[in-house]
Amino acid sequence: MEKSEQTIVIKRVKKVAGGHHGGAWKIAFADFALALMAFFLVMWLIESTTDLEKMVIAGYFSDPRSLANSGDGGTPYVVDLGGRPLTVANQGLNLALVQEDQEQMVEASDELENPEVAELARLRAIENLQSLRGQMEEVIAGNQAFEWFGDSATMEVTNEGLAIQIMDRENRPIFDSGSAQMRSYALEVMWAMAGILDAVPNKVSIYGHTDSVPFGNNGGLYSNWELSSDRANSARRALVEGGLMEDRFAQIIGMGSSMPFDELDPSSQANRRIVIMVLNELSEQNLREGTIESERDGITPPEEALPSGPMPEIF
View 1 (cartoon, rainbow, N blue to C red):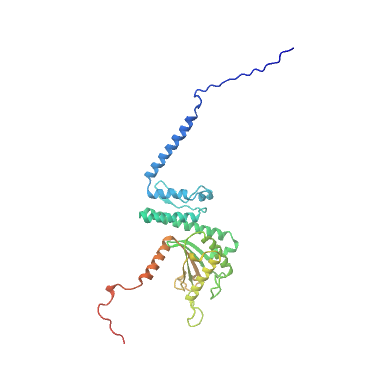
View 2 (cartoon, rainbow, N blue to C red):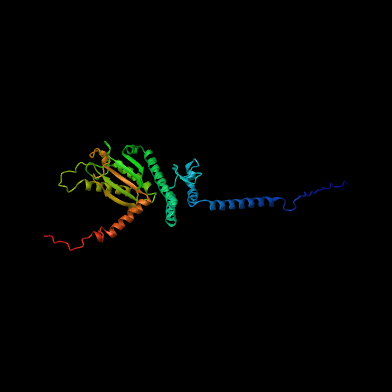
């Protein structure tokens, strides 16, 4: 009877010089040391930067979506080697987040009374409005029905805000002749603009203008003053129909023919226009405070300007 073959198992134990834990602790310690060094580096940078530079650095990280959407790695918050803020075009800018960040900076500037912070807030407000203008231009350019708008409108960022002027052109009036009834193609543009304006918290003022040609022959019962006011209010209604809330309006004013666009020709069709002013925060604040102050204090002359003696009798 043959013997059964016996299986032989050989166990080899691999000995490591570092013992049970090996060298893994060295990697963990290196990671800890690197993190600690980065922490102290950040603390040193914070200590050595100015308040203005801190604001810019905070702005850099406040809106990551704008960085992702820009496609070129750009950001609206750029600091050069001198620590001065620079403005760059960024159509991926999220206006709501920028406005929120801007309000925080303005509050900080009120507390610190720092002129550098106030200047940064002003630059950021301009950047906000420039981005708003870019969005409007993009919407207008993307719709063939709005081709007429390019020759009939101007958009400029001013000290007060974003001024959008829409004026009459040959064969393209905004309103029916002598009426506050807005043409259908102008209504469509106003509705499109309302959707963009609704995305930002800025207040809006609307001014109506006419040319110098007298309105009708009705003994002055209805003049260019009434017509310009009605047209400004018609533009307001169009924006409300497009989705802009009623509480977003600051002023609706009829200017008549007092402020012609073409001063050399007061009867020019370019003087018949609507101006939509998207107010920046400073202009809105000045308007609100100025109106309240004038209504509260009135126009009473100072005491030294009043006559000292009795007033003469008038028969």
